[in-house]
Amino acid sequence: MSMMGEFKLFAMKGNVVDLAVGVIIGAAFSKIVDSLVQDIIMPPIGRLFGGLDFASYYVPLNGQNMGLPLLEAKKAGAVLAYGNFLTVLINFVILAFIIFLMVRAMNRMRPPAAVVAIIPEDVLLLREIRDALRR
Image 1: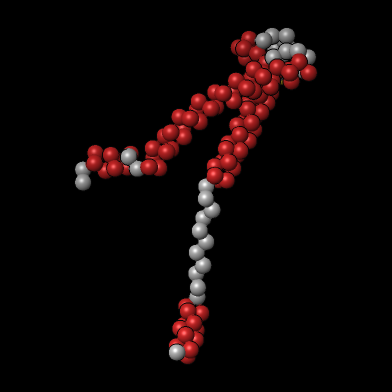
Image 2: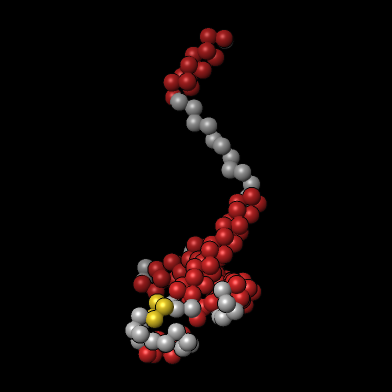
């Protein structure tokens, strides 16, 4: 089989196609969660912490003025942008929780796996002996 034939066989396997669909849907879903965190959840949290955009909170490491916006402070030197990190962390937690709920729902929709009892060979032999003695 040629290399192109092998590649076509590999690419058309169900797992590869499923993975591609999952990545595409995951990327789109990630944008929804980003918007949820940045536009709905973080503004009230920012208001609790002084009414500023929470993602712009930082600690200057190079003697910058605290009143500068985050982008200007970064241009002036190193900053510890903890607000942005916390926003991304909350985003991750929400995304992980929603994916957990989706996997949990999918697992509940699946029919339970059939339990196949493996009978030891000695038990099978004893049953055969018992059945032979009954005859």
